[in-house]
Length: 319
View (cartoon, rainbow, N blue to C red):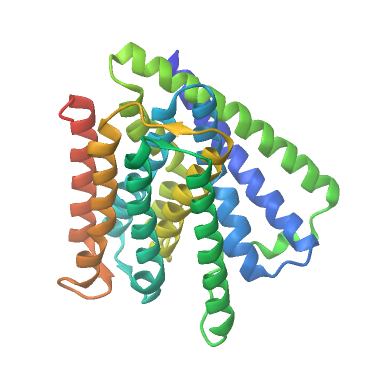
């Protein structure tokens, strides 16, 4: 029954996330917010909503391992699983913004998260606020840079122009559907994850860094694989790095501001965070060696193989 609850929860999270993105974008157009700002802030926050609701629900339910494991596992899955499969199917080109802005910010937040968790074995309100402030500063710099780059094509394809004409009634209905689906989806996924951990005889942390994390990464995985198979522009490396930045800064930041997240399982600090840091750090040598600014099939296979090893070790109890 735990698998059923998890699957139902994941379906509702995907549906709820889609409705929330559409309603948020439509609402932003009504307030005359520029397409650039919508793409970089509204869409990014809305697509992080499933992870946020799962982590918040887990923290409030007294399951901090799921709250932390969900985010750490999602960040590992975004690089190892999603990027690995995408690069294996269709090579990706890396732009300069990757190592000038996005990657340094992701590494900075990842390292900061490690020291925040290690310092007092809890992520509290002040640390959550610091994460949120760093995200706001980063977005301000990003938007300012993008506005100046008038001769450069901006990557805001995810903003649907058709949503400008959406009626107020539709926006309200979409918001209600999205909110309800996210609420029940997160609750059922957390309940299912806890039951599954009990029935399989593994810790909640193992389920959260693997199955729950993969589940909340399904939308990115589906979008990237479909695009790669169609030989279209696959999901960009920038989008995945951005997702990892938002997972740490907004998901854990907001959750910690609402409810402190203690570290109950020592393996989160001794193993999981280092896997997350490792997957993030390896992107730099992969970006430059042997072929510069390209992620091809062999590099994708390396990332995917490493992710499979991570999941196997988690379930086998090797760590």
